[in-house]
Image 1 (cartoon, rainbow, N blue to C red):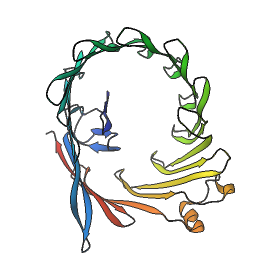
Image 2: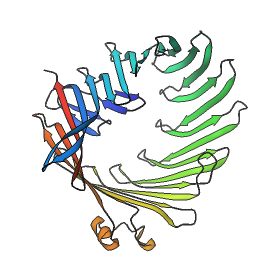
Image 3: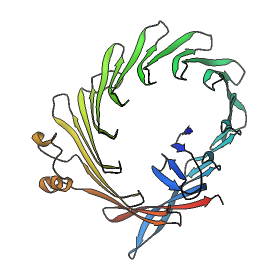
Image 4: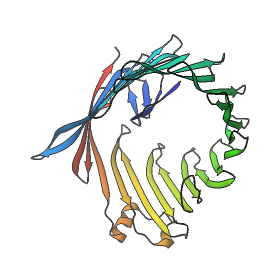
Length: 378
């Protein structure tokens, strides 16, 4: 089961599956790592780092975040605090694991979401907005009506799905019941999105997205149009393990993005464990000249944690060498007299192998200390 939470500050995904303490893995996009054990809660506190006579100590507290999980590895609550924001998310699930209530607090602005409705309140506790959401028997959201505080309709969205649960149609209506936008999406036999069209109130196509895939289901081409004009296209290549190794993005001059014509090339390398170890990007102006170049390199410890990152921005190499991608990273630095930014991490671990302290160094200067308090189910 996947749960995706979008909050003003944070975006994270939890992939669950708890069997026992030694084999359970909790994967979170929020931290980009795999965690061991039946985790009940994780609290991360971030400090600035200070070097005092050769010893790295905590400086000022920057922020903190605590996430609570149920025994199935699903999020129950999130508490995030910083100087400017205090955000709390609470999820309540039924016995099948479906969220039946979600309460969100943004600096005291409280809102409740359930399987059927969402109510938001202003800082004084006055009801501000209500969403009435209806689902079909497959738990697909088929109607979402937003009401104003006086009970009048703000707008309504109606969705339709195919037999596989893919959303194929979406209709948006204003407060007077007038259709102002619709989206029609097509899929291939494998459920991959191949085309999506957005129409205006006069049934004219405003934008179109077209995708193409290889025999393994990897997206290899994407074309995006706005008002009939091609805005961008992307061509991707993959290795035999399904890792993307090359992506070419071509952007055209368009009022929507205000971009000059240019080409951006991304290249990736992986180790035998499918971990990204090298990343290179080169962007070109409309006249073909190089606009910006970036290269990054990563090293990992035996617990899959990143311990070193090398970053080089706007490095100056010859045009004829730009596409080779054969020189070693440090050779490029040496030959072109570029400054390299090296980020290193030092960790301490608990008995489960999860890190509980992480110190970040930039070019050997301590910058950030992150401390964790992890509570496990017994």
